[in-house]
Image (tube, rainbow, N blue to C red; front, side, top):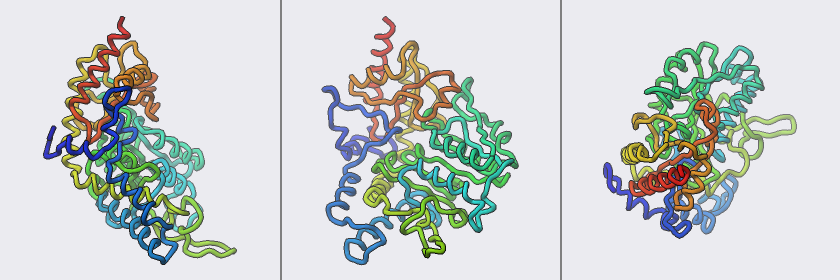
Amino acid sequence: MTVGGLDVEAVRKDFPILAREVHGVPLVYLDSANSAQKPQVVIDAEADLYANHYANVARAVHTLGSEVTNAYEGARDKVAAFLNAPSRDEVIFTRNITEALNLLAYSFSNASTFPGAEGLALGPGDEIVVTEMEHHSNIVPWQQLAQRTGATFRWIPVDTDGPNAGRLQDAMIDEVITERTKIVAFAYVSNALGTVNPVKRIVERARSVGAVTILDAAQAAPHLPLDVQDLGVDFLAFTGHKVYGPTGVGVLWGRYDLLAALPPFLGGGEMIETVSMEGSTFAAPPHRFEAGTPMIAQAVALGTAIDWLTELGLDRVREYEHEITGYALERLQAVPGLTVIGPADNVDRGATISFTIDGVHPHDVAQLLDEYGIAVRAGHHCARPVCVRYGIPATTRASFGVYTTTDEIDQLVVGLSKVAEMFAR
């Protein structure tokens, strides 16, 4: 299948795992929102660094030290270009997006005691805003920040009925984000609903009241072009393993003036300017936020994944996955008792579809599909407030990548129909 110049069969050949079988049948991997599979070039990049170039970064002048430092900092350049960041010094490597968001929350909580950061400090009367569809990683750190500082935690609710089902209640954006709001943290694309949120609409409202914006791009980075200058956000984070890269590495991007004002997250080697027994001063960003030995091989392999994805072209990826998602939404209508949880149409929608089947627990759906070689996820997907809002315990979620085919969607529909029939007896 070729859409918009993207040959999915050629793409699939880059992924060795897609050739394996599960329970005696070919693997159908529909769990990319959880973690994407890895092309061979990414696997090779990590192995090559350990086999031929390994040393610690920024700590040695010998050849291996220079090679690995250049590779690590080269990956930072690739991320900066991927995000159209004004400066490479705005790119911080973390273990994952969860750490990136916690880094920010912790730094904001210490802003009142850090020279130059007082204007970013929170206290009683201030408000932190998220949306009801956030991943727990973009809820819990801000709840904890509110508890530490006395700020109020608020959220923009999700519609569950009518044509706007699965989307934010637009009128509530202006009502919830007020002059008291200091931070607005929200997802570009919902991992549970597939909704693509109106980033510029939210940023415009936040900016009008002087609030800082933090964008969770974990579910956007593999599927949509990202341009931090065009989006207008103050911070953006994503994780490596969802963009066809390795586990153990994530990215935090932030406006340099804000990063330079914030206190460090961790203390230790490489994040310092000077250390004496009387006190310490800290390095400029990004190194201020990268204490200790970093995730060297993983960052380098992430750079390779970004090269691979960039060569495919994010515009082509977006077009292809839009077609796949539309095809899936149409085909899933044939499954008896199936209800899509989230937007029912393919407008402003990512390549993730959550659903329920009448009379069947989502975990049973996922377990039975696995017997047919089909990998999906069941649960609340670390977004329990969404399930609470819909009044359901969990959903089954099928999520697509650039390697997903219409044949795999058809196999999903056949498998789901068998499950529905089995429980209808």
